[in-house]
Amino acid sequence: MSKEDLDTTMNNLKNPQKEVALKAIKSISSKKENALPTLRHTLQSSEDEDLVTMALVTLGEIGRIAKPAIPEVHVKLAHPNSQIRMAAALFFVRLGKASIQPLKDSLQNSSNLNEQFWACWALAMIDSKKVNQKGQSILIEVEAKTDDLIEKAAAQEALAKIIGLELHE
Image (cartoon, rainbow, N blue to C red):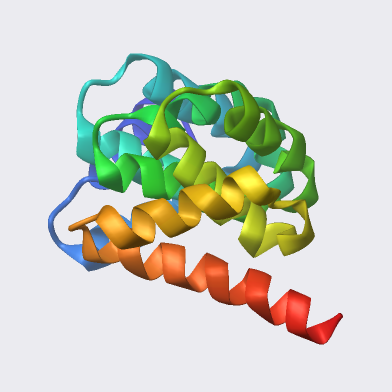
């Protein structure tokens, strides 16, 4: 795929027609490490929130090969846009165990509740044993106080995984 073709496909990520956007995700995902520089650059420099969200989704689809993008994705957990935060958290879930330490760092070192919340959610989805008492408190707080239905459902999902683990043990 040429640079021009990749740029065109990147622009298709934000196409309002879902079929076009999904085709772009599949096309870029199939290029794996060849698409990584463009996707990372998009996260670093684009102010187009739809494009950033779709770049995060695409990185998640690439999987473990996208591990070098952790620094760019990590900062998106604190982004003002809730869709971007959620897409960043989903990236970490797709990446799996390789993302546990950056997520634990967010939980321990960030003062941003949104970042802490999505880090906790991702940790719970990867390995609920990794969510400490502070993380559980954050999940409970967000579940009780948020007006965002997606955040409320995510908090409930994470808490259910944690409770399920405790009941199983």
